[in-house]
Length: 162
Image 1 (cartoon, rainbow, N blue to C red):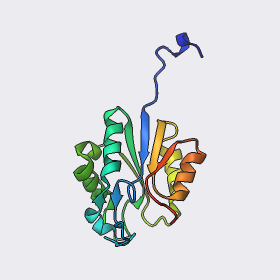
Image 2: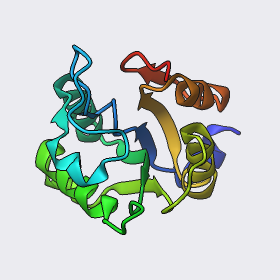
Image 3: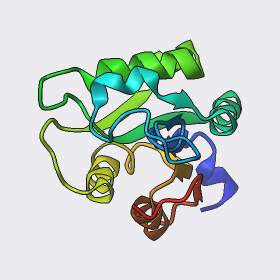
Image 4: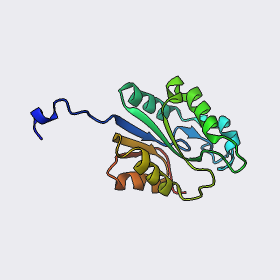
């Protein structure tokens, strides 16, 4: 394609895929102390922000990239609690009001598949044909391997062999 054929061709929005648990939010302290259990979603309000990653995400957003939160959290827990609403509230509180309106992709209630399988499906359904993905931020080894297998640069923000 030459310069003449690209003039006026709409470009897809540039995006960054961002994980939540273990990436922007921490529920395990550096000494291994748990603030909440892995599936205790009613306690996500207690998750701690991860300042270096939050600053990175905000800088990428300020540079004009669409931020897509892609989480292994369910929309609702097994008791029907809205994990989506709690997650939105946490993101708005710790990343800013802009996070209220950004794309938040989550697994369906009762979906017990591994995170990498869920995120691959979410990517295919909501991201791959809509956005040009600049990079992904994640912590889990299997998810990092997924993004890289799809040709996406992935910055692994923490140990993720779990």
